[in-house]
Structure formats: structure tokens, C-alpha cells
Amino acid sequence: AQRVTQPEKLLSVFKGAPVELKCNYSYSGSPELFWYVQYSRQRLQLLLRHISRESIKGFTADLNKGETSFHLKKPFAQEEDSAMYYCALIYGSSNTGKLIFGQGTTLQVKP
Amino acid sequence: DAGITQSPRHKVTETGTPVTLRCHQTENHRYMYWYRQDPGHGLRLIHYSYGVKDTDKGEVSDGYSVSRSKTEDFLLTLESATSSQTSVYFCAIAPGVNTVEQYFGPGTRLTVT
Image 1 (cartoon, helix red, strand yellow):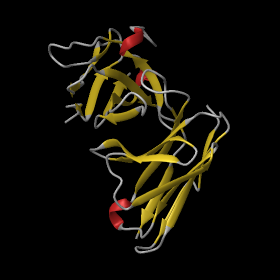
Image 2 (tube, rainbow over the protein chains, first blue to last red; image 1 turned 45 degrees about the horizontal axis):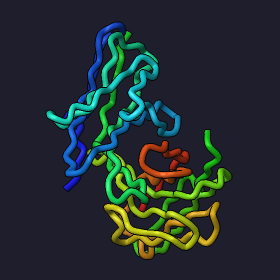
Image 3 (tube, rainbow over the protein chains, first blue to last red; image 1 turned 90 degrees about the horizontal axis):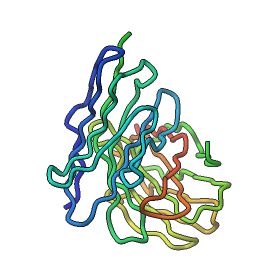
């Protein structure tokens, strides 16, 4: 069965420190993975998707099929990065767009 | 923000009463989704729609029904609310599937007493 696991409920770092938010998945097909972010008092929004291999707000994420991971990284955290981060996986047949989310990780960047 | 609104934004209701939440979009997107957000579970898909009158179940559909009679509106109904359905409910829309971004509404906080 498909599953997305984010092992850390809370990650607390100091400003300027590197950040790695962990995401592991279980899926029998070819995975399509995303990171969504929810800033305080804002809507959940897409941060990045693995297929585009882009860097958004300094964040990157590489799909590692061998380790079934899609960790989110940023070399130098900023206070404005504080938010809830969700890793998500598309599953099911190709015409549904169904997402399964991890439990979420709260990133707290201290000054 | 994409043109998605949810109503009501907050609701308190009693166990056993029916509740309907509304999601309204102005983007003319084909796909619409209902999720619930709970601590320790992240977001879980309840039901989704891939067109007018075309709906299907998600991960946690028991106790919920949906209807979509117009492109712009997707209704979620709790036939007989239970305390376990206390949650924050999010609607999302998407023009396509798979690699296409889903846009989320502001959420509805439902408390069942």
C-alpha cells in the first residue's frame, strides 16, 4: 500500500543553519512526489515537485528511488521559512490526481 | 490565491446532526478534492470529483458524501456528524492531474460536540 512518512513532527534550527526535512515513501509504481508548505495564517501551497527539479526559495529535493526518499533541503535557513511542511505522493490511476500526504513537519527557525 | 472559497469557515454542531460544507471555485478547474487535516495524520483525502456529477471515494470516505451539480461547487455532507469528524476540512482544485499543482482553499474548522 502507498504511504508517505515524515518521521519528525518538529524540527527546530537556528537561522543560517542547514535544514533537512525527511520524507520516505512506499509506492509500487513510478512515484510523483511534491512538497507543500503552510505558513501561519496562509493556505497550503505547493513548494516544489520532483519532476521539475527546481529550487524554490532556496529549497531543493531530490528523489532517491533506491532509498525511497524525497528529503527537502536548504543550506541556510531563514526565519521566514518557519512553517508546516508536507510531503505528498500522487497515487492511483492517471486520471485522478489523488494525493497522499505525510504527517507533516513543523519547521521552527530561531533567530 | 486561486479563486477558491469555503463556507462556512467555522461551525460548531451537535452529534447526530447533518452538516454540509461548500467549496466554490471561480477557476473553472475540472478536478476538486475534499481533505481533512488532523494532528498526526496530515491531510487525508475524503472524496474527489473529476467532473460534474463524477465523484469517487478517497482514503477516509466513511460517513461522508459529496455532490457536484455544477463545475464551480463541490459539497461535502456529513449525514450524521460524530465527534471523530471534528477536524479542519480543506477543499482543493486542479485543472489537470498528476504533475499539476493543486490549489487549496482556506479551510473550514468543524467542531462536533
